[in-house]
Image 1: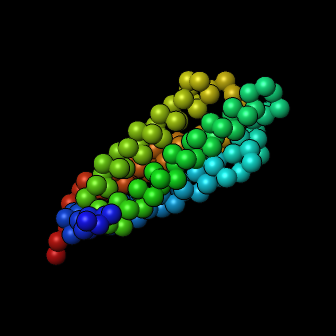
Image 2: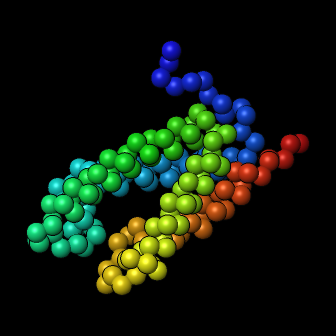
Amino acid sequence: MALLPPSTNSDYRGAAIAPWFLMLFGVMTIVPGCIHYFLPDGGAGVIGGLDLDGPHGRTIVGVFAWFGALQIPTGIAYLLIGLRYRPLTPLFISLILLERGLMALDGWLLKGASASHHPPAHYASVATVILAAVMLVLSLKPRRTI
């Protein structure tokens, strides 16, 4: 038995750009995952602007590493879907839309709304929600056949 089942790309009927978006998002998930996991401060201080000198600094760095450990395999899954299992593209773009929608809601309107500093992900999440919504529609719309 192989680690990966055979490709199902021939069954995908949506726009060709949507799986490419998913793969790009996969790379853009793996890179911050590596930053969060491998940087000494997980990017919490140098990128996120968090004060790590307090009593909870090590906990914050640990949470960033934990999140990076989630981002790396998730990004790999996005790459695999875009490369080999394209019929799952709408589902995974829907999950991105949910994830980034919740992040944007929290960062701008709920818990993070009163923050004096917004990390790059707060801005990127808003843009990603819009782009993912467009890609979801495109992934669900059957391609024209000539």
